[in-house]
Image 1 (cartoon, rainbow, N blue to C red):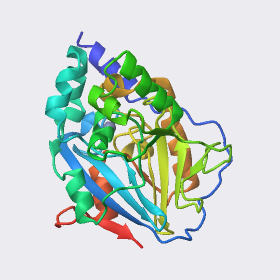
Image 2: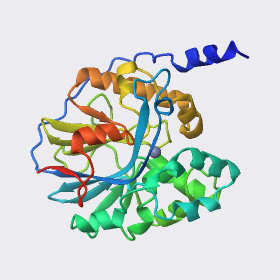
Image 3: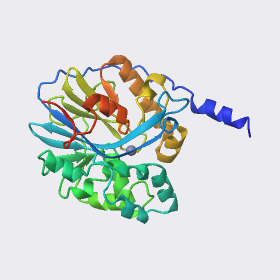
Image 4: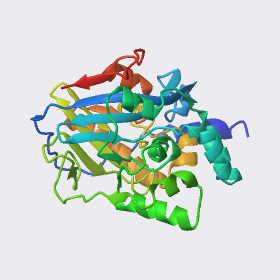
Length: 313
Ligand SMILES: [Zn+2]
């Protein structure tokens, strides 16, 4: 048994194979002034080894479970909605395994900002839509507090929600699935190359917010490029990786996070390889893992003011 552990560790830190060569379409120069705000709905500090495979550079993984408010002249768009204010109550509907997974992942978050209070403080009463990177509890938790707001998600993710409503597998919170019923809008991706991807959805038609499919972590996971200025551009990659160092070190998430949260580990690894390729093609584009607090602090500053930190416009 003593010999098994190093072997397991060795397997766990294997670097990823290269992504197949792919044409690269650069991000356009931004033409519309937009602003992005980081709403930190919850967070926690866990050992760095939870965040990425192998021996991590980060001693701790400082977790944020954010909602990003993107303010465009054509409307306010919310990218993810953070944890639920009622998570304690909602998670009791899950089966034993679902409750265990929740307790090891999204359930560890300690609540910070309330989504609706933060939006009200920023002067937003009703966003045009909530765009979900995927439907896990720490991304879809705020949907029920925004009644009537359309929920944009990939068609595969909508199917996942519809299946959960009929035959729950505890992939998501049943309460979140019910909250989305009747207001899900599938994203219509166009076959237009963007970055190193084959399809895209240009939300405002001006290249400021562009969504691409990134299936693996869940069947309809997406990534969102946000193009504020030539020096402030990022791609929010949901939970494809947990820590940004996964890109430099060419490794996926930790064994624990892959096992507990990835629907398709092989597909997720292929997406990480594509992110490594993207980073090589456009090193100034910030790759933003949904939960890597340190990157948010670098981008937006510490969240220490009465109002959530915003940048742009
Ligand atoms: Zn997550």
